[in-house]
Image (cartoon, rainbow, N blue to C red; front, side, top):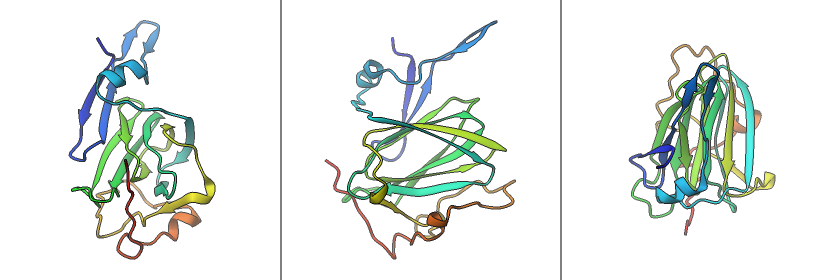
Length: 188
């Protein structure tokens, strides 16, 4: 029996993962990824890189993608809480331009898989958050693309209550909307 509960979202290929957590008087233990369990659930993924970031409350990273080397990402939070979002940019997808978001936290231990051909971003809801993720392709710094975080045509419902200021990188402040810079990924 696997150690994970997989829940599909309304966007094909995007799913939530809830690990089994074993607790006793010493603390807790959980698997965060198991290739066999994922394959048995129909998710045959190959990860080549792991990343970790640390951010403070109100930091919004995204909405990012790589243009020529799209990455699938299995994301989770090891400290704090974030609202994590994926936007479907796959050519011909019935959900093109639609988004799904979920709260990921150290308490709920949920993970979200964002497939290749999606834009990805997150907003830090706690005072501080540490965010870790596995990628299906390597990072290519000269291959970055993005969409404006508050693009009205996508209309992500960011949970802004309690957030005094959205903190963006200089790069993230300059992204255009999807209408201004249409993009779609041919994903095989």
